[in-house]
Image 1: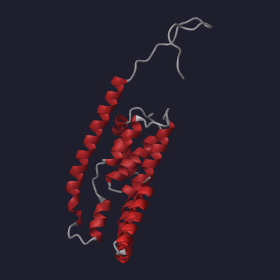
Image 2: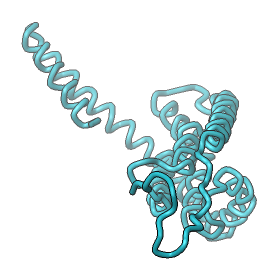
Image 3: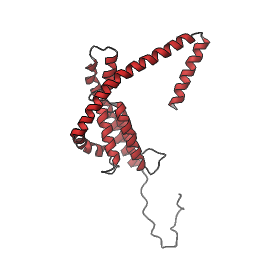
Image 4: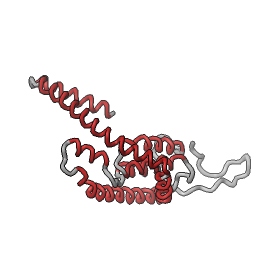
Length: 217
């Protein structure tokens, strides 16, 4: 769907440029935007490689494992319907750790794998489970200690103090994460209150149907 939206925007811009006689300006803007995108990407590569290298060192030294053990009780509280030793919890911890360091690109693959593992626990694949909704909310509003990607972008565009956003980013993401968790708890409680009561099994004799409407499958 997103690809079609982008294609429509590009097609409309070219069409309006042709109608107004500004095709050359549209072409120049396209090439200028492409050049800026490549320049920003090169700047991001350096800092992302640096932080991902540090993450690899932290993983080899056991820091990531200790961080995972420290965060494990919180993750189990946030995802009570996921079994304790399920692989999804490991991917969720990796996703949250990467988001803490502002490594959104590194967090995305782990988030996708976590969703795939949570889908295996889903009895109705057409409907997202509460755990999947919780993961999406936390991944979107994740608290960020070091906004690595944003610092790299600010450095690329010549900011005199690119790290000045650490404090405001930490405050903003802490508020957004708290709001996401409160909303998640509220919806979970509402779902439990609105869930239909579990019917006891029928005690009718074998070979005879219990009274009442037929069960629907």
